[in-house]
Length: 449
Image (cartoon, rainbow, N blue to C red; front, side, top):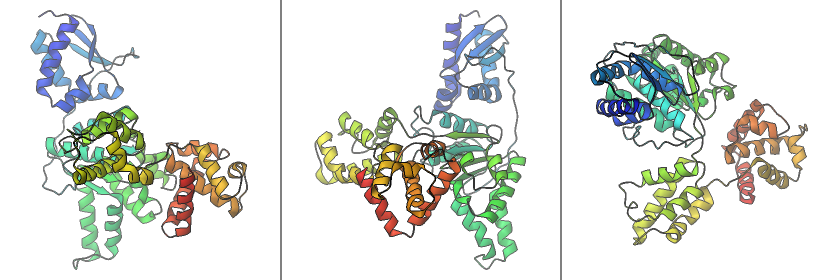
């Protein structure tokens, strides 16, 4: 059958859509274009390099058979980016995975379908789906990093749930804190088990898996013995082609206090970051969150826009605002949720909980004024406690109250190395656990901001 490019692409996509699930089709096929079509060769244009790899490694047979069914031609198939000239030879790999019965610790309600995608998290979602469709064969380890509340945990659970639903692989999700606690308990096992029995159970739990998902790996900092055990677990799984997925609130480069051999292994696969959601994404997240709730039919667009503007940095704050509004609505029972009603419902929540739109200079001035020093002191070389402590506190606030990176903050404090900023942030965080006076200082500085 002789078809023009447009006709062939339309028929091709219609058939592929019937053979794949909606998430896979939307991610890997929806943006395909035909670049070149000859009597025996077809070249597709794809949006990202990861599409080339996924289509070549995991969907080549489906693409080949679909094209043959339509045209009765065995094409040589290539995938190119618009900026590329070179060709890529696709590979097809086979795998036989064992079957298990196990406890995953996954939250089944966190999946790819309810993960709202925007420009700030698109690459992370695409990478996550690639890993979910080919665990152990692409991006191993997958290292997802970004500030708290941006969707890292959601993506990790989505990967695990996808793998469980579409294969017989064994998946285990745990937090770093859980891993550390269980490892520490080897010295003091419960349930009348001896140390050797508990140690063997620990190793079997974390090594007898096909996919290990560890959340908040930054808490390994300072735990040298646990780092050693995690290093051994990592090597065992990676050498067995088992998938490892890790999350952190900072990039591998910023985890300076971790052993170098661990950080280098985190870079073996794909480190991918998630940024705070932009305004458009925040609006779409709100609409997704209120679907099938009492707010859906009552909430006006102006109220959605207000919440999106008031909660600029953290998806959890969006969820908190929605929950607060839902509770207030249940008490008042309004006919509609307009801007005035929303402002009234959230006035205390917004004032107390939402990050202000600050920049580094503004924070430096607020801290300098509070401690009766100058901004030049904060940027300078003085190391007296009168200056060093406010400087560390200012660095901490810059990290908490802005979207700036550690290197950028260091640059604004006299060109200091980003490891200095990390040290300052960790030090202030540690002191806040026991120092009420420091917590009060920060509260008053935030008030001036």
